[in-house]
Image 1 (tube, rainbow, N blue to C red):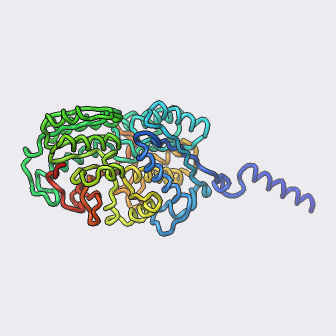
Image 2 (cartoon, helix red, strand yellow):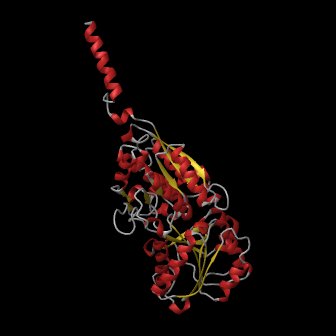
Image 3 (spheres, one colour):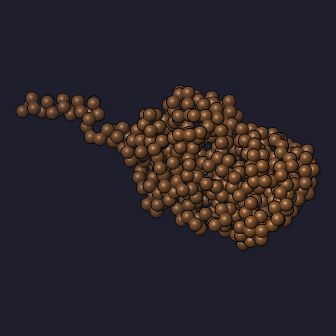
Length: 437
């Protein structure tokens, strides 16, 4: 009998040592470390706070059980296929500096031993950070950088969930075309010659430079006359000469790609110089941030911005409304383009890890390349998330789409964004032409 007990104890110890006692993934339950690199200080700090809050909310839903949120990751406590492993986010501040971003990525990989990376908002920083991730074979998901070139490098460890600027800029020109065809709610078709002349001003990092190039290309494609195109430094303290140059071109439409501080400075300078275009459109970023609205107040009425999330979406998509309510309770603000995409980026990490059932890079890579998250799981108005695995844009989500909103005065007197494009989901008549400053 004593010998039988000894044998049983020996077998039990052997099973525990070799990991054959019970399901392997249960034995392997642990924290999964995701390094998150955002601009948490400097001129884009406000955007960084939004991004951080969006990612943190997604991690909260993934790590707990929220029965009233109809989203798969909110129904399990942790990563189910990894024995309930919890997501741990390790935040780093790149300050808008691509070199610093690359250094932080190395530290996260070598010192913190992260399982993957999320970031970085600035396309210029995403470019250097993703190069480091590629070098070390560490998976990286990008939720909020929109330079088209990022998914044209043939990288095997980089996936992007957000649509990029080529899609967003095309949305803009489809809107302009729709104005001439009478497709815009509340606007009778206008002659193309009334909005034909365009001028653009874009900040000159990776992101703004690409947007500027896309505006040039699509102006030709859609038959508009680009009379002025200039690049400027986002950290400029005076944009007077740039605005004088734009005004001298006498454009009907002014287009901008700006971060928060320069977007505010640009509009204040346009106001001071009494610029009066018929349309002002911002390529998201600074034009959508809460401080843009809070600082400029009613003077932004009629300005357009592209985005991927607007509070009006909650009327169309109940899931977005529930998550937005949680975000607003935490931050005091509605979800915006940055926070909704950060949320979606971290959510994508959770779904990939669930599918992989492993933290081995090769397993994560295989799962990412075969993931197909349906649109009804997302807070953003996309058809879903499915990454391209061939062609020119490796790792690009092919199911994304954009929105164009317009600042309009709400019933309580505050400024809010109404959906103007796509035309079939517009939430208000478009204000056209711009009232002026």
